[in-house]
Image (cartoon, rainbow, N blue to C red; front, top):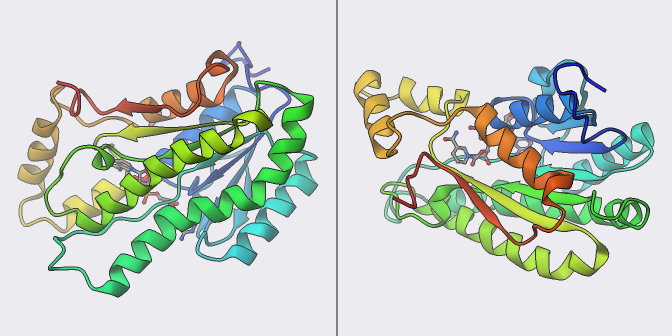
Amino acid sequence: MNQAHPTGDFDGLAALVTGGASGIGAAIAALLRDRGARVAVLDRDPAGAPAGTLPVKADVTSDEAIRNGVAEVVAEFGALHTVVGNAGIGAIGTVEDNSDEEWRRVLDVNVLGLVRTARAALPHLRAAAAERPGAVSITHTCSIAATAGLPQRAAYSASKGAVLALTLAMAADHVRDGIRVNCVNPGTVDTPWVGRLLGRAADPAAERAALEARQPTGRLVSADEVAAAVAYLAGPAAAAVTGTALAVDGGMQGL
Ligand code: NAI
């Protein structure tokens, strides 16, 4: 049991976090590790995987790479209980701005990446659920873009709307397998992703202030705050929670 998190509510569990080498995914991987899980980080660039996690290099656009990655994790940990589908990319523009190719790229990573991850993991999750009822889950990092109309984010919002619907459909399909499926809907989170966005802005300070003002709390969400929500949804306290989208958005959607 880790001293920093004496609850150790993930003790004995094995977790896989996609896109876990940066930002929100890295915060999730570190928190699950601190709560007692053995954690694998599947990322196309796993160099930033938190210390004490197992880095697995794979791109979620490759079915074969994900299958091999999941097999590697199960071989190392002996089981898989917790899957966090978090890898994602952005796209800026209206429907007039993005090409079919750009649309396909965003949907391939953000939606099909989750489908491929689940397809590879489900046989192992089903087996784990039989042994640890209530402890097995899939959690997706969706976005408030799934439910709020954001300007200049047509392809990204469509991809996250699909993630929300996918989450609900998977929750229905796998509830009898003992596998819970939920998602978090973050507002704007202070991660390297947003740093890159601000770096490209004409006036980064003004752009940051606009992003902060968009959220009623007047600040960006932290990656740790999103990780805490994911750990709740994936953990034993949420054993009765499936098919839920939990907004962590500074009140953006609800107020
Ligand atoms: P980030 O860019 O800091 O981290 C994303 C990670 O995913 C990186 O480690 C990257 O290497 C990995 N990745 C990207 N494409 C991949 C692929 N094809 N295969 C394997 N790994 C891949 O981004 P951030 O901000 O941590 O975002 C993580 C998730 O959170 C994404 O799904 C994003 O849509 C979602 N999100 C982010 C928000 C934000 O404001 N930062 C708000 C709402 C949702």
